[in-house]
Length: 284
Image 1: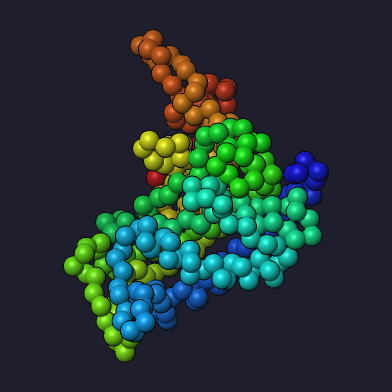
Image 2 (image 1 turned 45 degrees about the horizontal axis):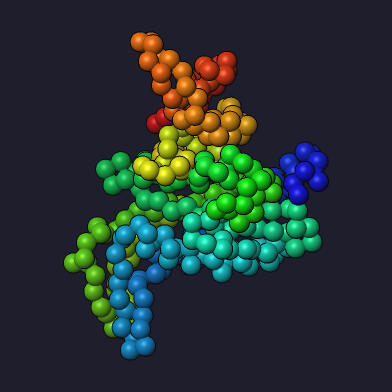
């Protein structure tokens, strides 16, 4: 268990893991893209050597990118004395659990996140979710929808990929090519940027999806790379407190009407914390 390690030991192990992972991630761009920064994946091939192009559908792109970099992640884990445990179920958190081979009490959660630049404003991306703020997030010993209890992990990281779409997502763009035409096929995405941050560093104070209990991310790319989320100046403990209580605390507005707290400003006022500590960049 995590509590078998001292705070100083956890901080040292966590920082060492983050440094190595960040260095590794900077090598991935050359693994997935050409010299002209196009994706090296052009489609999929059958036994007749026909290449079927793919669309820019985000779910398809996300899954293929994960498959593309997984062998490299496995090698990174092996080189650093970790094993990777994949989530047992599709909706489980996290995508990858890094467990140290010599001491299985040392675990890190890694979620793979992919998103695309907004064509109308390429300084921003479409954003992504940072996991649930439901049962396993609130009850840190729960095993519901999580590979290991949340509290077993020394750190919770996002390994992210930001890209640009080359084509739109239309059925008319799908086609079949002989393998001899491989290099002439236009990649559906390009211009990759990789990053590693702890998920609390990327958090906004808004839910990341409509009907599910997911934490939303910030969307300005520069701030994502730097980990300049809304909680940057407040720390992980405030991030935890806010999202554990998201929509659960009731206050009265100026008219006397009861409302549930769903923004960081009201939450800090309720807790008696200086609202100037909100990282305003995360609002951009």
